[in-house]
Structures are given as structure tokens and as C-alpha cells.
Length: 190
Image 1 (tube, one colour):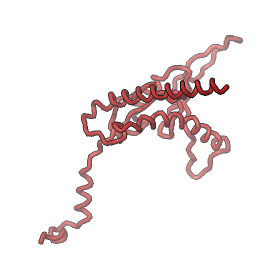
Image 2: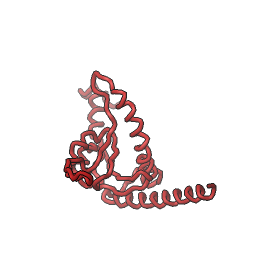
Image 3: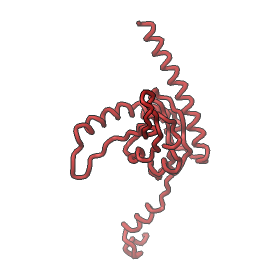
Image 4: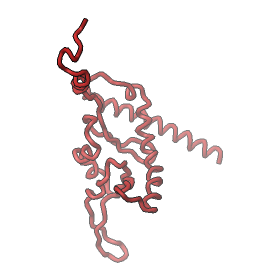
């Protein structure tokens, strides 16, 4: 009969805790840049999955790499990105007056302040932003429909970005075919 954990001088809970502490995380995280039409435009390098979205954005200089005049719709993990946008000098064509304007617009949902409530304008803004962001989520979600992306992949993590680029290219082709068929159907019925 094996000795009990009490006989070994180690409680069962502590023994289980030491086993759990040895777990390794094999997840990877990438950032996708999409347009409003479900097309994936850019894919970041893969990094360990435990890295926070904001730290990844800082490390990759995501905001600085976005083109001028675009609108970046992000989730709550990217709050504070709007403050990192560098202003540019814009000249009004009618008056010739120069003014500072943000280079691009970063929109994130409004968080409820601790001990307070959101204003009615903030309550209205969050669902409007969600309606835009769901199209972005669909694009990244469609890439996860492919079995190679949805299942656990036991291979060198260095090839994961290449796999994701390939799958996203296939999703883009599939989306373009779907949009062309939808446009042809609309033209036929009109």
C-alpha cells in the first residue's frame, strides 16, 4: 500500500498545487488589421499568448503604422491608444488657417467608471461601435473556421504566422467571391 500524503509529511492540496505550477502555456497571439468589408489587410508576428493587447500594440507600434486619416475601432484592451496619436497640422482650404488635428481616429468602447454610471451618450456610443466591430470580428472568426487554425497545432511556433497568412489569404479570396456573388444577385434582382 502506498504511503498516504500525510505519512509523507505533505498535504494533498500542496502536492496538487506543485503539479499545477509546472503547466506551460503554448498559446500565441497575433494582431489582425481588417477593413470594414471583412478583408484582412495585415497580420502581426506571433507572440506569447499571455502578452496583453496594449503591450503588444506598444511593442509593434501599431498606431504609428496605421495610415493617415483612417479610423481604428478596437476593443477595451486598447483603451488609451487615442492619446498616442500624433497630431498633424491641417490647413483649411477656405481660410488658410492652420490647426492641429489627430492623424487618425481611435475608437474604443467606454468603460463604466468605478462607482459611477455611463452617460446617455456613452450608452449610445457603445452599441454603435459594436455594430462596426462585429464585422471585424467576423473576419478574424472566419479564419478560425479552418481546422488547422482551430485545433491545437503541435509544430514549431515559428511557422504559425505563415499559416495564418495563408489561411487569411484564403478567407479573403472566399470573401471576395461571396461579395461578388452577392453583388451579381443584387444586380440581377434590381
